Length: 125
Image (cartoon, rainbow, N blue to C red; front, side, top):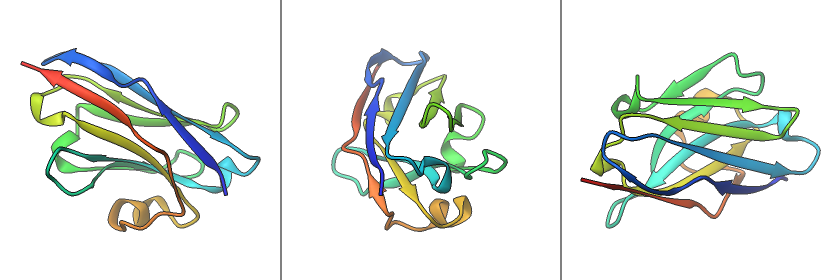
């Protein structure tokens, strides 16, 4: 398995942008589909975006389409989530996940092989 560490969270004003990073340790990063999930206060964890092993397929929650972009750099063993036009409702802890199944499965399942510990994104009005 890989270990995942998220970074890049912080406080941003509504309308602003942030880029989250998730760096993996281990030698098999490219064998995992990767996903970003988030959990807002008082709510369940929800899917945000997923990317396939070779970055040729991506999936997004409807609420973030057109504003969030997932990408990965297998050489750097890192997956990114670029977020623009942030809204107060995007405030949440954002988690990175890795799974041996497809990115499509990652976009639909809720149990992943590995999870990071999360990074907090706070969007102020």
